[in-house]
Amino acid sequence: MVKERLVFFVLGVVVTLSLLLLSGVFPEMESADSGGTYQVFAEFSDVGTLKPGSRVAMAGVTIGKVTRVELDTDSYRARVAMEVREDVDRIAIDSSAVIRTAGLMGEHYIEISPGGHPDSISDNDYIEDTQSAISIEALILRRITGG
Amino acid sequence: MTNHSYHRAAHFLALIALLVLPFQIVAASSEEEALREYVEDNTLDLVDRLGKIQDLYSEDREAFYEEMDQALGEFVAFRRVAARVMGKYARQASGEQRDQFVEAFRRSLYDAYGGAAVSINSSDFDLAVESVEINPRHDDRATVNLRITTDTGERYGVAYSMYRPEEGNWQMENVIVEGINIGLAFRDRFEQQMQAQDGDVAAVIDQWSAEAADIDGLEDAVKDGEASDQ
Picture 1 (tube, rainbow over the protein chains, first blue to last red):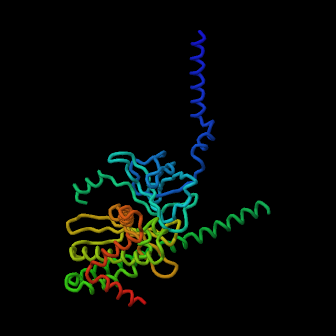
Picture 2 (cartoon, rainbow over the protein chains, first blue to last red):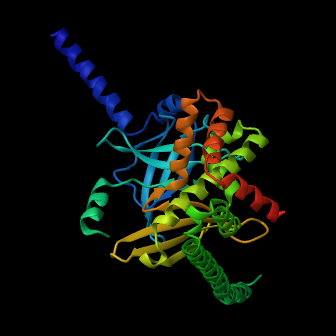
Picture 3 (cartoon, helix red, strand yellow):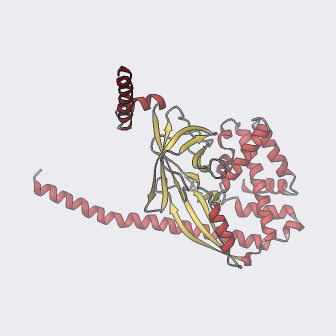
């Protein structure tokens, strides 16, 4: 009887903690893990499978994540918002944002290729030089249709 | 201030906005139109010039590169392009090394253009500027989209990234061909060479310079071009 109560108690605690975590009651736990971040934007003509949560890396090391992917209805290009770790604060303004594929058929992610300009990107700045996702299907289609 | 005064002020501001807005739009569009003409003229001039000097490539390499320098020297922002290619390593290179790389890179580009010039006929394709967009965040940067159509009907999209210095004309600082960022492709090549040379930026620049110097006549042509610029 006591054992059964203990099991229910533990289960109840786990479920309650899970619900609290899901509802965002403990946001400070996340920030304690990730530290501060700043926001950076980039525009692409094709984002492939990039989505919120996709990783942002530099030299293969994760430095942030994609927070938003939306269509700019003026330019009809995709605008991507990224959260970058605050300690990565010397990204040159002539850096490039490249959409790469993890492995041959893996998920898309953003790789920041650092530039050499002495000035650095600040909060809400745009990385102007980009390389969109390269679609193998589009390349094959182009070969077939000849245009 | 009374309600009546507020309304009058609001109407006045709205009127000013209505009067000013069209001028801003016209200014932006005329700037884009001027850039379109500038790029169109320069690109067509380059294609035309390449067509005329095709034979020089095999007959007089030095004269060929002199022509190339005249055609591209003003239109391409070689210093910015080279800095883009060096990427993060530009910060660890000395001013002298950066100058050396600008020259080496310019020479290697001329060689690439030279190779293309002997294999392509200007009558084989049609070139048109499709659109021009001044960067809404930086009015000294713009993208010019061109469409190349070959005589066999194949179509290729080319985008020039343009930069306008404080003084002088717009200059090209990058090219994107069919979605491939050429500046980034060169940066990847530089990065690979840095890894092969164990991070020795001087060795990579020397290697790049040595490869460019191997091209017959190019060194003298570039030097002559620089002398005529001064």
